[in-house]
Image (cartoon, rainbow, N blue to C red; front, side, top):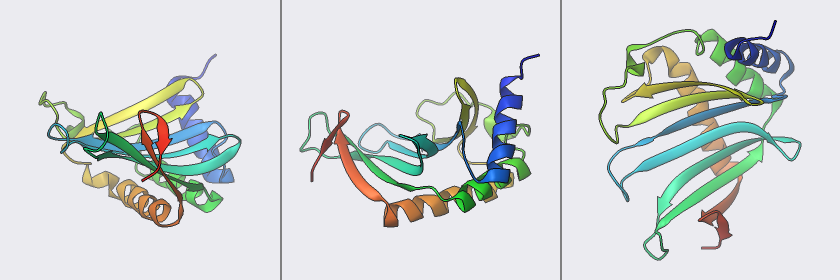
Length: 170
């Protein structure tokens, strides 16, 4: 019998908590939305494996009218430590991210509403939770660790700037 997507992702999180390695798991936290550019916000934190290395990557949209079109992507990358992988995996399990349902998941049908997404990917399988306006208070520990990792990678990671997928200097 083939595992469901949820079972496969759950096993990946359990393995990450036990070993401190992502293996084939990718963990993503995105927050964004709001008014049209230049006031639109899009921040993406990913814990992932790239070129055989496990990394923390944070990308944020930036607006600069000296570029056409004026949208740029700032990106910071640094190695992911096993202790960070274990902590994130532990909190994903402890907060029941894959199984709990919250009122904030009900789409209010408002264009450009600010939202949060937690995406968990293993190979070609993905589980996604979207929360509108705010994260449920029960997920505060997840938000807190993601915020700490964003602060860490922005202060210690390698910074790059991209315009239409090509690295640019500033």
